[in-house]
Image (tube, rainbow over all chains, first blue to last red; front, side):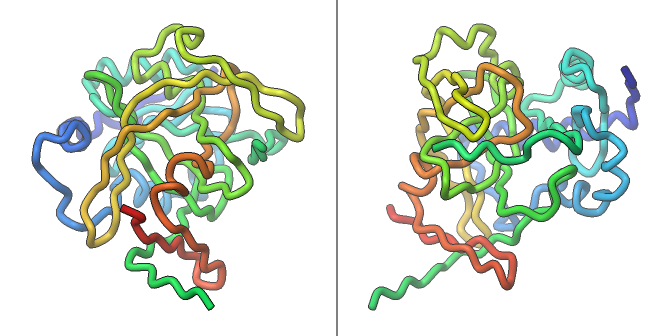
Amino acid sequence: MRVKEKSKGRSGRIGRAASRARGNGRRPSGDPTWPELRYMTDHIKELEQYRGEWLLIEGYSLVAHSSDIKVIKAAVKRHEIRAPFVHYVPEHDESVFLNLR
Amino acid sequence: MISVNYPVQVPYREIAGAGLQPALLVPLIRNKAAARALAILDTGSSITVFNLEVAEFLGIDDLTCGERATARTHGGLVDFFLFDLEMEVQLPGHGSDRFPARVGFLASHRARNILGRNILFARYQIGFRESRQMILLRPEH
């Protein structure tokens, strides 16, 4: 199991997103582009190396990656991230579509 | 002839391990817990389901507390459990839309989160402009 923490991330941004999601009256600025998605787009080739692992991305940072979700949970708690964005990078042989019907 | 004016366009997203997909990052809220998940718009799925791990981040420790259901996939039957929570969609130039949603969580790990027709497709008219790799949305409400 590989475990690595890349940076501390920006928990404040996630906190704001969570607050917004809870409907505290603040609305997004109109730019819906999440920094986490921008990070994923900008680092798409680099992230290929993490197949079979979970990524914890916060703001424009990869905070942690691990094949063990418990490690990711611990990182979420340690960084006090209130609305974590956790993404699983599928292995090559994993089905990417469920085709639920 | 039916013509639809879609006021919202959202580009397809690069997803690590899956390539360019018509996906949205959706916050899910349950009581005081929140999590965000990247999910693919799937017209072939009648249900909306997320990974087991998303449920755990929402404080759902025991999936069997939800309503049990079964879905048919190419790989056979899969169990999932339904929970009432809130979902949010952020729309370019139109702010955010937060609404109650009955969402399924898969009992076993899967590589994808799926936005099926039962929630978002009922709330929006949705089109796909594949040549431009854009999701087109028009609120129904």
